[in-house]
Image 1 (cartoon, rainbow, N blue to C red):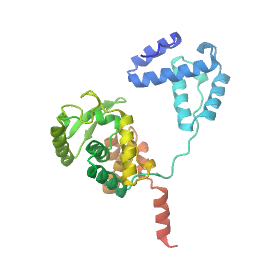
Image 2: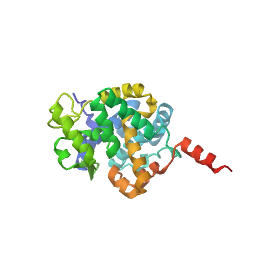
Image 3: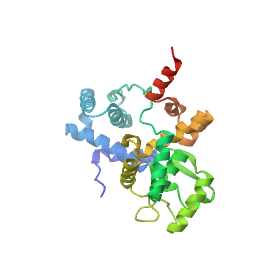
Image 4: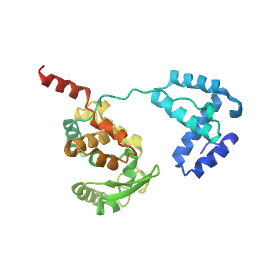
Length: 276
């Protein structure tokens, strides 16, 4: 059951709804602001800039910088809604990664799908192949349906942007056979209901078990890492970061540039190979 909204936040919710924010985004903004309100246990209208700074310091002592900034962004948006720009605070500076570590190698990937195939774990086998061959996020598996296999394409709408998900033709044919043998009619990787996605926790449990069986380090085997694997492989083949940004659904190429970075081990190997 949804938690009741604090009366002070009802106008803010109505404003967020008018901005056509997704339900998940609205819920996060409201939750973050209410967490802030409860921290001081007083009306939001009585808070001062010193209160905001104190809360920022508290967050920094409890959470990672990226999480702190997520909270602060929510608060700053709320202050803008109140037309109280003077209450806004700066987010923390985060040093950008210079390396991508714990990325899947081709050998890791092959070990995972080979083990899944040999042990007849076909659902996780195809989940891995779909994620690694399309670059989609785990939540977007809900769009991989029997109907979309006819063309191998489907449109996805989210965050005020529409993009196309594409599944390779060969994989589509394999999935069609998989669906026929299992009498799957709607969402391919469905949960208890045929039109809903399997629980993400269940996917994680299967990945964890598979990683152990395949001898692949557990820290490498999480659903989002298959998106990284796809991006790195795509760039290695085509060197087209603009096309990759479109495929991944990034608003900015700067977000995609992380995939141009090598891992720490790759950097070390390149330096060693110089023989200087």
